Image 1 (tube, rainbow, N blue to C red):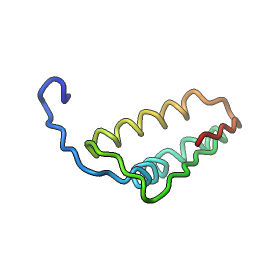
Image 2 (tube, one colour):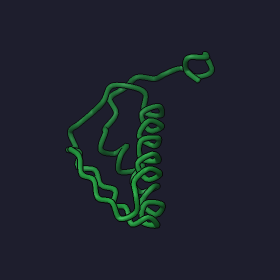
Image 3 (cartoon, rainbow, N blue to C red):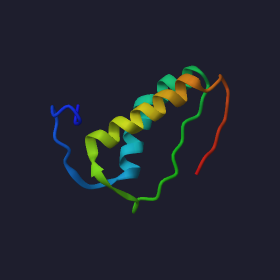
Image 4 (cartoon, rainbow, N blue to C red):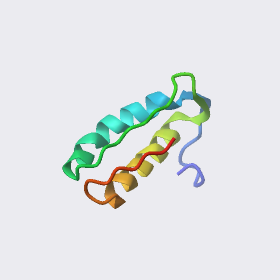
Length: 79
């Protein structure tokens, strides 16, 4: 939408941990149906300079794919 001119990006310092924390809450129920454990270990002082809404959409897409494509009872840990 930004590329097409419908939306203007608003760049700011975005707390990455808060974005993941919110999105994890949304996906935990869906993940638990597959017995998939979602976790994020992000320090509170980690910020990303960019658009908060677009960053949230990217994290949403990543976690959606993680739940969708992770086999039942699978445990994957990344840092």
